[in-house]
Amino acid sequence: MAKLLSDAVSAFEENGVPVAHVRFRHAQSPPYAEAYLNDTNNGHADNRSYRALASYDIVLHAEDRDLPLEWSIEDALGEANVTWEKSSGYRGDLDLVTTTYHIEVYER
Image 1 (cartoon, helix red, strand yellow):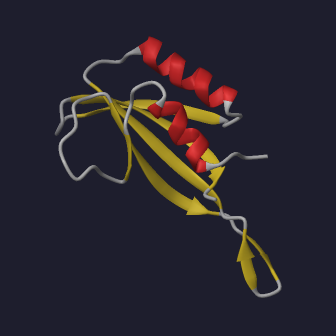
Image 2 (cartoon, one colour):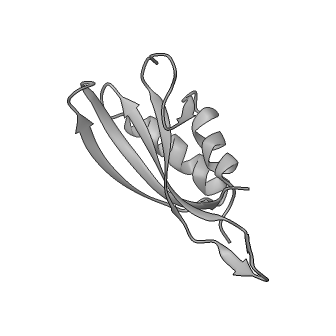
C-alpha cells in the first residue's frame, strides 16, 4: 500500500532538505526540493471520490550530485515504505543538478 505524501516529504526534511509544493516564495540555497503533482488515480464509489492516490515528482536541486545525500534520502524513503524511481538532469537556468524522485502516494 502506498504511504502518505507527508511521509515522503519527511524523508527529505529529516535530511536537511526543505521541500515546497511547486515553488518557494523566496530563493533557497541548495540543496532544496520541490514537489510537483503529476496526476491522481482516485477510487470512486457511490458518486464520490475517495482515497486520492497521487503521482508526484519531488525534484532535489543541488550544486553538484551528492550521492551520500541521495542515499540517505532513499534510505529514509525506504524506512517510510515509500517506493520510488529516480532520474537525473541539469537546470541550466539555475546552474543546478537535479535528481527527480518519482513516487506514488496518498495525499491524505
